[in-house]
Length: 132
Image (cartoon, rainbow, N blue to C red; front, side):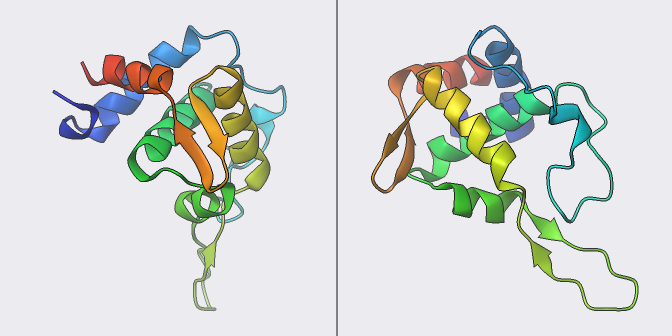
């Protein structure tokens, strides 16, 4: 069974556990104090949000790579919830995505190329462990 054959939620949960074992990936001290996007009303409730976002980014780079931060900001963004005005799409925060990608790059799971970031063999093996 491959990564794309499994339900995505199961792959992300198991990959999150694998990423917790890698010392280069650790949440910054401000990660629990900020919203992940301007369309969100509250900060995330879970303490594992950083690892879940890193696992999700690794999956997105695998599936759609090469990708850049702007495309990922658009993907992780969402609609604002206005009561009277029309809703518009808002991009996600760039710093959280950029820092998570830099940590994944430092761990050797993804690499930067001219067109964007792509997954490495080590990153693919981490995702394959998550798919089992």
